Image (cartoon, rainbow, N blue to C red; front, side, top):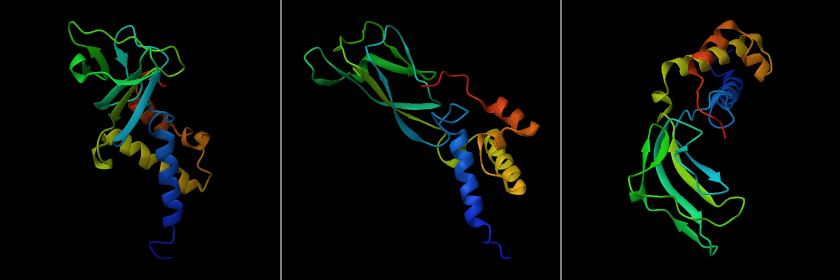
Length: 165
């Protein structure tokens, strides 16, 4: 057997571990690498908008549907990003929006950057999950990923405390 004999299997495990950990559907509640997301609301917020996926790098745009049904862009001069939340600057208020299922949304960038920028705890967790499944030759399932005490320890240490979508 040469060094590339298991590449396909290892690639599948890396993809499964990443899907298990990463972003909105991942158990960590964090975007691991830089990603663009949209957070939608049925109305304008009443206060700060705590974005449900971090770490938040920037706000790309805040848009809404006005009472006349036209899409509008909310001026970036009216808000700032602070600790993963969008907050109004002094003197600003959220716009009036139409009544509909999605009337207001925030496009934002989240993630640690490149894969090499992901915190070592999370990268080690990924290695542990991949190694455990590789050695056991088991199916890459949620149950398999959560069975070892070490995996549970790293999951607890790395899990985000933000609300999910």
